[in-house]
Length: 226
Image (cartoon, rainbow, N blue to C red):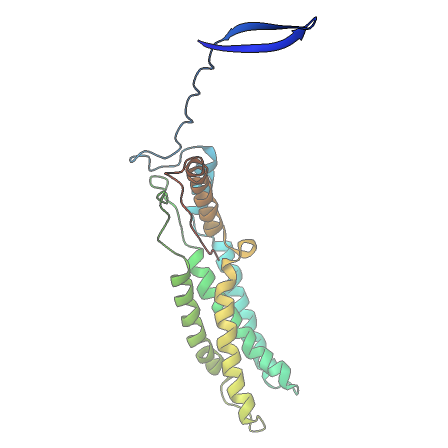
């Protein structure tokens, strides 16, 4: 029992009153939110919904990318003979951009979740980064986009200058590089990739809150997501 004395004055006299105040019971520690070693599947309705969305390819998204390729290639013969050099260069950049978006977005439209196994980043952080595969696909897009532009263009008119002939290749390569990274933008991502990222966020946040409440378990991570 804890004894606490209250001191106050009454009619010019000091009066002491001892009040026995029981100590407050210890609070139960918060339940740990770390998963068990065998907890491999979705844990609630929200995770099941996201996993079901990520377990099927986004054929509509992929079809839209292929349609963009068809439009860019079909429009190129008209732009090739346009009197404006800017319009002709735009045609090459349009093909490179659509081609890069198809390569980068096509990978993200593939299934990214299994109802029987959902990966969970460990408390010390996830070492599997997104940027290496994204950079590899972007480099592949930049290297193959000028080839596609050259095949689509065919023979070059004689009135084209050397600077125009070379610049359209560099523009196609740069547009292919940028286009392959565009599907990683959250607002433009296909459904499987967006659902996968949301599922990862739901699984990481409880571990961050749990670790933030203790000194021994605290850790800091830096992640860049496309």
